[in-house]
Length: 329
Ligand code: PBG
Ligand code: ZN
Figure 1 (tube, rainbow, N blue to C red):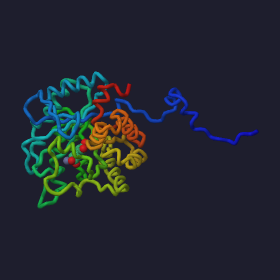
Figure 2: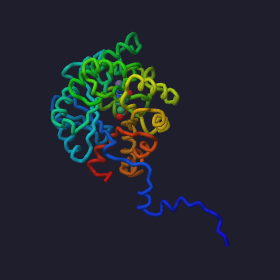
Figure 3: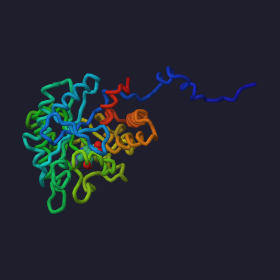
Figure 4: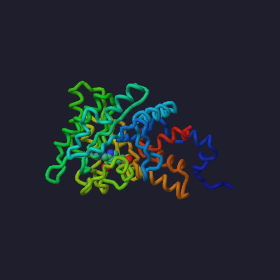
C-alpha cells in the first residue's frame, strides 16, 4: 500500500547535531555592545546601583576600567558610554565642556586599552539640560539648528578624546551630516558615526532615565522622536542618515520594532544595529524574579530574534552578564 506523501520538517529537528547544523541565526559576543553609565561623583572607584535597573551601575572611571578589562578578557570588547551631570542648565553646557566626564573617561580608557576595545559615545543633551530635553528650547519649542551646533561640539570633544564612534541619539534633523562635516574639517575622518536613525518615542526608556536623571521635566519627546504608529517614516530617516554619511544605522527600541529592523536589513547599504533598551532588559529581569521564565533563556531568545529580524549588531545591557557567565559558549 502506498503511503500518502508527507513532507516532514521534523526530520531536521531530530537531534541537536542536526539542529545545530541547519540553524540559520547565530548570536556571538562580537555582535554585542555593552552600554555603561558613568557616575557623577568624583570617586573613581564608584559603583552605584540604580533601583529599577537590576545589575546595572553608575561607574567611577577606575572601577569601570577594571570592569572593562575583565570583559575584554572574556571576549566582550565593545562598549557604549553615557555621561551625565549634577550641574544641569538650559543649554546643557556640561556636555560640551573640555573636562566633561565622558571625554575624560574616553581619554583614560583609550590610553589603557588602545585598539583592544572599541568605544562608542552617546551624543545628546538630555542628561545635561535642566529641562531634560534632547535639544535646546526656544520659546517652548526645541530649536533644531541651535541644538545641532551644541551636538557637533559635543561630538568633537569626544573625537578629540579618542572615541571610535560617536552615536547621536537626539533625533534632530540634519545632525548626522553636520557632525560628519565638523569631524572631517578637524581631521577626524576616521571617527565613525553610529546614528540612532529610527528612534521611537517609547515607554521602554524608564530605567535609563533613572540612571541619568534625564527625563523631560515638562512635556515629552514627541516633536523629535518617532511616532510608533509609523513604519514608512523610518525609511525616510534611513535615506537621510545614509545620505548624510552614517556608518552604522540603528533602530530603537528593538523587540517591539522587529518590522523596522527587517525593513532596514533590506534597504540599508550600511550595517544595521538594534538597541535593546533598558525597559526591555528590566522586563526580563522582573519576569525572572517573578518566576515566570528563566532570565538566560528569555534573554537569548529575545536577542536571537532581534538578530533574525535583521540586526547585525545589538546594543544590550545583557552583554556583560552573557560574557561573564559564558552563556554563548
Ligand atoms: C536619550 C537616550 C535614550 C536612550 C539612549 N539615549 C532615551 C530617551 O529618549 O530618554 C534609551 C536607552 C535605554 O532606554 O536603554 N537621548
Ligand atoms: Zn536625549
